[in-house]
Image 1: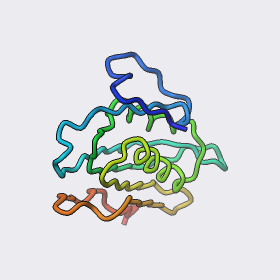
Image 2 (image 1 turned 180 degrees about the horizontal axis):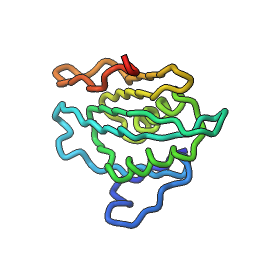
Image 3 (image 1 turned 90 degrees about the vertical axis):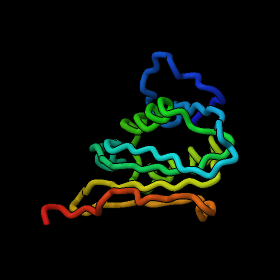
Image 4 (image 1 turned 135 degrees about the vertical axis):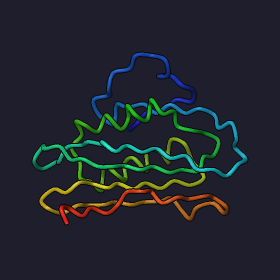
Length: 153
């Protein structure tokens, strides 16, 4: 289970890459505008995990959008958390949903969605999408900006 801290425990400190998502820590900081409806976006265009069958690396472009509640996730801890998947063997769907649910459970955002745009393995790109609920009324929700995979065509 991913650990959560309220306050930036990792910020400003030298922190090694966790060996797995279970060893990763997500730092939370108070939302300075908890009454406002706004969107936070994190984009990880070079996400890596391992295929649980072959042990070969899998690559994805991950886009995380959320409408904060009382807490924000601190970006350095998120970067280390996402990096911890480099030695983690799991299918695309599991990695994408694990990230979404870990963030949802840690922050309790008003709303969260994730797009996992996985690069082809075996000639088939796999895209995985999840959202916690309908977006809050009045939330500006831009497109995630990742074009569908087209190969050479």
